Image (cartoon, rainbow, N blue to C red; front, side, top):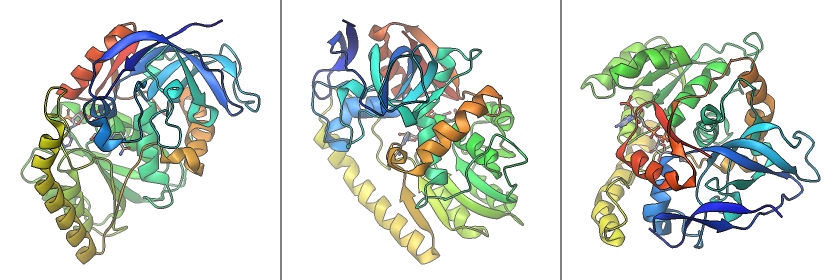
Length: 375
Ligand SMILES: NC(=O)c1ccc[n+]([C@@H]2O[C@H](COP(=O)([O-])OP(=O)(O)OC[C@H]3O[C@@H](n4cnc5c(N)ncnc54)[C@H](OP(=O)(O)O)[C@@H]3O)[C@@H](O)[C@H]2O)c1
C-alpha cells in the first residue's frame, strides 16, 4: 500500500504541520502524481490567514497548494494522454469550490489531478522549473481567453499559424507570476504586449516577449502608457497587483480598442492579516476602502463604457480554455521552447517541512521569482 504525507492546515489560520495523509486513487478522468516540486502562490498564505473570508467552503483539516510537478504513478480508466512514469506539471484544484478536496491539494507527496489540467514536460526541464507555471498560467489564460473575459484568439506554437492580430494587450505587473504567463500567452496568440515592472526586470520581460515595459512607480506611468498606445488598438488590459485596476481603467478609457479590463487582484490587502491578528477587525478596517473602491470602479467603468470582470483562476476547469492551454498548446510549446517556465524558481529547501517557510516568504514579497520546495 502506498503511504502518503502532507503539509496539513489543521484548522483556520494554523501553521502547516507535516503528518500522514491517505493515498487516494484517481477517478476516471484523473491521474495521481508523485510530487517532486511544489511552488507557493499568494493564494496559499491568503487562504491560511483568511480562508474563512475568501474560500468559506474549505473544511479543516485541509491540504492547500496549486502548483506541482512530478511523476505519474496512477492513471484513471478514461485517461489516454498519460502513462505511469511520465514527467508532468499540473494545476492542483483541491481548493476550487466544485472540487473542495484535500486529496487534490499540491502540498503532499501524492496528489490527485484532473488529466486536462496536467501537461507533460520535456526531459530537459527540471521539476523545480516546471512547478512555477500552473496557477499563474491558468489565471492568465482565464483572463485572456475565456469568452466572458478578454476573449482573445488562442495561442499557437507555430508562429505562422498564430495570426498576428496587430492588436495590443496591456499586462499590468508583468514580473508577477500571472504577468510572466500572460505576456507569453498573449504573444503566442499573436498580440503585442505592453507591460509594467520595476526597472531591474525590464530586460527579463522583453525576453519573454513584451515590446515595452514601464515602471509602475513612475508618477507619469499612466500618461506614458497612453502615449505609447497612440495609433495602436487595445485588445484589453489585465490588472494584476494593488492599484492596477485604477490605472488600467484610465489607460483603457484613453486608448482605442476593446474597452475591457480583467481583474486578477482582489482589492483588499491580506498581507497584514497575519495568523495572530483579529481577522474580522482587520477586514472591517478595510471595508470602507473596499466599498469606496468598488463604487468608484463601477461608476468609472460604466460612465466610460468599460467592461470589467474578476478572474477566478480555476474557472477554466469547466470550459474550453483548459484544453486549449494544457492539452493543445503547452506540451508542444514547452518541448519547442516557445514557452518557458517563468518567473525564475527560487528553491528554498527539500521536503514538505519547508512549505510553511515558503508561505511566510511569499507573503513578504517576491520580484520576478517563484518560491519552490523540492520534494
Ligand atoms: N484571481 C485569481 O484567481 C488569482 C490567481 C492567482 C493570483 N492572483 C492575484 O494576482 C496577483 C499576482 O499574483 P502572483 O502570484 O502573480 O504574484 P507575485 O508573483 O507574488 O507578484 C510579485 C510581483 O508583483 C510586482 N508588484 C509588486 N507591487 C506591485 C504594484 N503595486 N503594482 C504592480 N506590480 C507590483 C513585483 O514587481 P517588481 O518586482 O517588478 O517591482 C513582483 O515581481 C496577486 O494579487 C494574487 O493574489 C489572483
